[in-house]
Length: 333
Image (cartoon, rainbow, N blue to C red; front, side):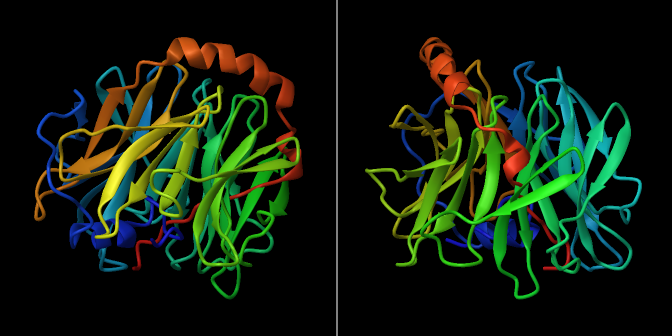
């Protein structure tokens, strides 16, 4: 599984178009399709507790890079709005996360082809560029909490990925303990500061992690060991993600308290990317090998359980000022 591009990297999605999807199941979990009007493809990747959905969509071909135009979007009550960083080339912005107070994070590509992260709050855009990042590869935020702390990853001069947190203008970089150098992605964080992400261990196995106050816990689906990717997290520590079977097919899941729930949407393939405290989950899917990707919104019936877990997460939360991470996507792939 190639985790470095994550969802925002359209090259990864293009790879999924080639066949990373299984056979439909007979009966699927109910879900609502999210499709930006006029878009060729839609990828929903974040949701907050007000049910505000964010992501990015593909529309047409970018004349600078030759790949698809990528635009960020918000979906608030079914009303779509396009998000474009003012420093980005047209068709070069992806939104990857939203906080409970409406702050957005994502990444953009400028006219020189360099990739940077951004934080948007109250209409003000702040560029995020990790000092250790190679600008040609970039800095890629994936999550933001209500305190304005950001998590993601950056790519270094060799193309290796390292997690980071950003807070009040300062970056803190990190690698997961036991990881292969250059294989760590920070993908989500809670309002209490717990950090989640994934990495490759020294045996080359893809694993997830939770970092509560500097204490790392490995995440690994026991039914599908060493084949899972972990993405967004809610404040109870429930994580959205997907696992990959032996044939390379993707299956969306949510992990909560060590219990892994496959979403089983009844589609050819799916990835879950965001989950809120109400148990609403977003991601994207497709229904045929040659079909387009669309976003989905579904629910897992566990918000009561998660509410109880919030107490524990609040006690264990660490300050994100220690660390920082970014997810980068590329329009050049």
